Image: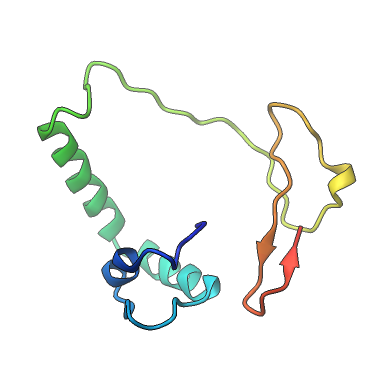
Length: 103
């Protein structure tokens, strides 16, 4: 969710006060976990899909589904031990609620 709190419209649509500082990434994560318990994401997806169909943005004669398996790492792995090829996930940085960076 890069830039999750920068877009004022996004914060407003999520129910956060757009005139206040953006919530922390942890707050957005908890918010998304609550959304997963409902069918609101599915409803929004269908609404956007139907609107895109109506505007002619989606061609319905071709459907592509990407189900590529990617290894995911739950624990910190040194950058030097990360596999660097076109099929493995690359290393990245996460920031915890206190602002500390983890690789």
